[in-house]
Image (cartoon, rainbow, N blue to C red):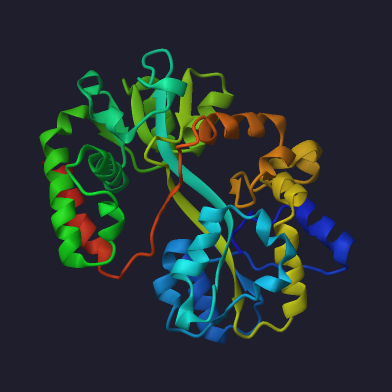
Length: 346
């Protein structure tokens, strides 16, 4: 499982409840997970933690087994949109979901509260706000995800049909038509962009000292600024934040299947799921992974600070949905780079 995803408090409390010891192998990339599983054919591992969009890399390898949902009594606690990923994108051979959601994070809109306010009720931003005249030369984005945000905005204007950006993942010819529209818009409006970011440090520094007023950012950098008392707000946009999800899958050669199901079910309990975000009432004694939980309502068992932040970011409007990164075909990233480079070097 990914480094840091199993806080000490989770391991200790699971042991106290079940008597089961967790033997954890830390990984740092999806490639690392795949390589380890391929070497052993899945032997030696019970649970692995691939990212949701990587399903096509696993579908033909026969390294995973489908879940028996009847063995997970807390499955009803899982966010519906996140749970649906396994049924839709990890249902290999129509044998059932081979993946369950565990931890997620997002990319949305951050802005300087002393310089701008989103122009709608509840201060709900839109990806389109970054491309309005009042934002000329004041915007920070990452090229490829910023262009996706543009596409989602264009879906709302009629320039693209609803669902176009998701449909672009299904067919290269269709993708090229859709991304040509997005790229033309971005090139025409490149003057909006103050700078492109490529890491968390760049986001934090530029937000406070380089003339940026708003941007499409990962959640962690602006939340750090918010916690420091800086005049910054991060929020899910009207179109839905871009969401990555790391999950849990069962090895086809799992040797401790009963224990694996017990662990997964425990991860979906409200209290341990919430405490594992940032320690909750136990703080550093429990530890935390620092991301969002796939368990609906888990924030109530995290710290009061996190619960307030979560409500401010994701619960301001019932219209806000998650835009989860789809499974990515092998050709997609290369074609996307063609269009992002046209924008970057225009």
